[in-house]
Figure 1 (tube, rainbow, N blue to C red):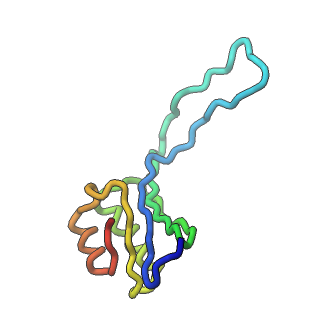
Figure 2 (figure 1 turned 90 degrees about the vertical axis):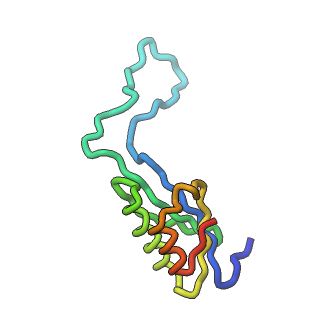
Length: 118
């Protein structure tokens, strides 16, 4: 698949929450009494949100981690995406949850910066 000239196709998604937790492994032998593995842990420092963009033609993943994903946290991610391309390049952003991102700040930023939500 060839990238359209003067345009970029980028997928956007939010991954949340990011956390580290133990996962059971598999073994060839049976244990009489397996060690207990807790289902969760104490989140003393909270969890993180990854706001990520993937350009399928360039095979490039770009993103930023945030503590939350509010309407104030998302525009900086779009500004970072816009800075990765020349101003004349049209960016088509494919979102799986488009209706959630129809916030006036995001829509206005996209309109002003040669971007289109798909």
